[in-house]
Image 1 (tube, rainbow, N blue to C red):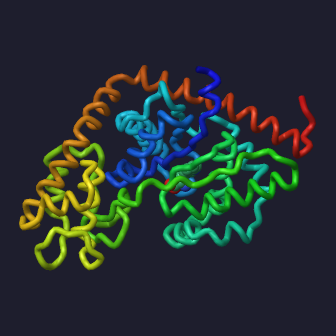
Image 2 (image 1 turned 135 degrees about the vertical axis):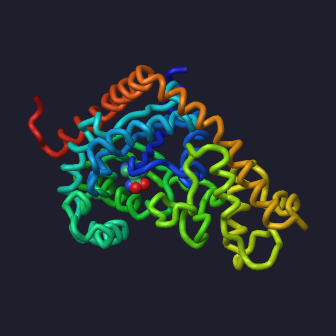
Image 3 (image 1 turned 90 degrees about the vertical axis):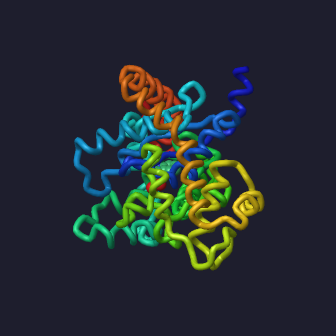
Amino acid sequence: MEQQAETKKRIFSGMQPSGELTLGNYLGALKNWIKLQDDYDCMYSVMNMHAITVRQDPAELKKRSMEVLMQYMACGVDPEKSILFFQSHVSAHAELAWILSCNTQMGELSRMTQFKDKSKKHADNINAGLFTYPVLMAADILLYQTDLVPVGHDQLQHIELTRDIATRFNHHYGETFTMPEPYIGKAGARVMSLQSPENKMSKSDPNPNGYVWILDPEEVIIKQFKRAVTDSGNEVVAREDKPGVTNLLTIYCAVTGKTMEEAEKEFAGQGYGTFKQAVGEAVAAELAPVRERFSQLSKDKAYVEEVYKKGAEQAARIAAKTLRKVYKKVGFVAW
Ligand code: TRP
């Protein structure tokens, strides 16, 4: 048993607690995380240290961090199978980040599109942490000798940089880090805004009708889908010139497990109204148990605390091994 567990590949992923989670987070990431738990040694973390690269209200950050952890659990991240923890509970993330930052070039960090985007968006707070954010992310990943990192397309550049840093370190100091690879879930799970389907569904969408929270009540979810933009014509088909309908079909398939052909056939000859109602109902049905579990967890703070404390201990043990190795390699005096 034990031996088998040791040969499983390591998965690491996390989200920033920068708001409630959306259907996009659920279908694009969480649903995938859940599936991976049986075949991999998974670690899922709430990236609260990353979150403070933009201004946060401390009380809000604390509340949302806890809620994100509970949403991971409500969606099915199982603390018996996976290691679930807050990034800030394992100090090795910051310690390794320092060493890696001394092995990362300013030029490499200047090229990161997320840095460029965020510094435009937060022009009054272009702090050094925003710039070195990808180094902390590299530390998150390399600290656990991660094999695979499930992420969205927007994070591929950061994974590429993580690989460059690892390659350079291994080359300079000798084999130290496992080379991580991005793990992109099925393309079918790329969820777009319900109002402007050319953009990704995002909690920072200025139009609140563009997204659905995973904890929204059934009637709200159905209403959001009824309001979703469709395209001209009345055919329910996935086509490039029909981004709205295509997005709804994608969501429907991701939730029901049906193929695109099956879904198109099911709605052939039916109007957009019936179709949107059906998608809304399917999503609401999928998320109802998540909402229920979340509400139960909110009433059981002691259990949640037990989970993240145990998670932090487990993570810290693995992290310490890597950090010790790194300290030795760079020539820090042992103590
Ligand atoms: N940068 C990621 C995001 O914004 C979050 C993140 C931080 C992450 N560290 C990570 C994701 C390590 C995967 C692995 O979505």
